[in-house]
Amino acid sequence: MKRKQIVMAVLTGAAVLSGCGQQETEIKETETSQTQSADPFVPEIVGTYEAEDAQLKGNVSIGSSREGYSGSGYATGFSDDSDACAFSINISEDGFYDLGLATAASDYKENYVSVDGESVGTITSDDTEFTTTYLTRVYLTQGTHEVEVSKYWGWIDLDYLVVQTSEPLDASIYDVPAELVNKNATENTKRLMSYLADNYGTNILSGQYSPDGMYGKEYTVVKNATGKTPAILGLDFIEYSPSRVANGSSSNATDLAIAYWNAGGIVTFCWHWNAPEKYLTGEWYSGFRAEQTNIDLAKIMNGEDQEGYDLLMDDIDAIAKQLQILQDAGVPVLWRPLHEASGGWFWWGASGPEAYKQLYILLYDKLTNEYGLNNLIWLWNGQDADWYPGDEYVDIIGEDIYPGEHVYTSQINKYLEAVNYTTAKKMVVLSENGCVFDPELAKRDGAMWGFWCTWGSEFVAKNTSIYSYSDQYTEEDKLKEFYNNDIVITKDDIPDLTTYPIREELQ
Ligand code: CA
Image (cartoon, rainbow, N blue to C red; front, side):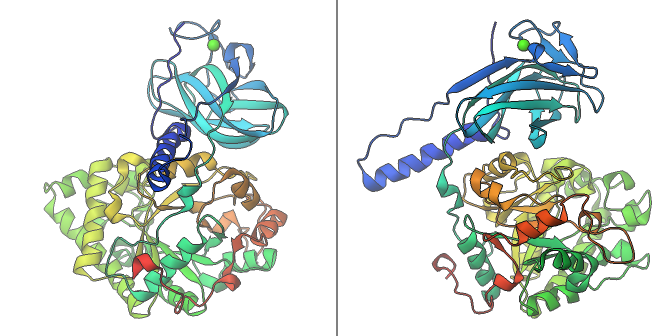
């Protein structure tokens, strides 16, 4: 029976990394001219487990009508949340392993994979023929483990699990230059980027979204829980969107950012861009969600909707004014516009990658070249290689991950996927998260995210008028442990960024 192993570039860190490793080898060889020739890494398969022999839960049963399976059939019928297939696997040596799952589906699907009850990521299926995709660098100790595939989107046929050794991590992925795409970046922006690059791969900056800034609910509960203050304050330009202002919104996010920078912290901004009022079809305050608007970005970008284009330019003008205030105050911004685009749930991602990329590049061009905003570090958060606008528009790559409750795994698979969106060396950060990962696991796995930045409200605080920490996502003792880990940078660790040395590559 045929076993088809298609390597999907975006989905399989191992395969892409091997490409990376070869590049690195070539560089080393030209530098040293003769050392031993590095053979390409060949994984060792340590076990193959047929799904039809595994423990099938809920509605999952054995199927045989789809051709091309191995063994005597495959697991099928993942339709309810409790539906799962659990493999019992045997590992003879502690180490990192890639978990390959052979699946087929009528169209794109994602499903959960856990090891011994801990989420390690999602497996993607996008082929009607059985195809193996890999979760990379799962750390397994000697002994028996349970690998469970459970329903997220469901609707896959699961043929088998193959467990193989992982390629050693290429340490040069952390060796990113402190470069900025905007060559006119301000001194403070260069200093901040130098600081981030100096720490990347060794330390991880802590971050927290807090709509009311450093004295707000989120900061208060985190500080009370950990004794520490996050290095990075996350804010949102949402309430400066003209269609919200027209409905009575106001914001002090810019002032909060200036106060935090002046107090020695670092700021990041996203922008839940409320669509122009003309396009709002639902509640005005949900006007950043695609389903609450009838805006068609493709028509705006191809010239069919000139009025829409002009309205978007007015919106950009409103946000540029805030960024200008920050620039005038000397504040560099980790700027994350048009976030989570490939998910399609925000209007800027609902017309596909081409229209999105046109808007992203237009935004970059206007803010940089027309408004002269040189205090921005461009944090791209499109979350899919097909949505990558190009190396010349991206300083840092960000992923947003909400892995569930009390899930402290490093998310190494996503980290490596993000590293491989481009062959250029870019820093990778966890630009939004629910649960915070365990820094010790990140270090062990090599998932050295430049920073994390936990979203606000229920992700840290109870929904009560009294400021009170919520254990729902990250338990309080875990958060305390993480914030006090030696490799985690909190606000009190940050040197004076207005005098921090600018790295050579930025001079
Ligand atoms: Ca099978």
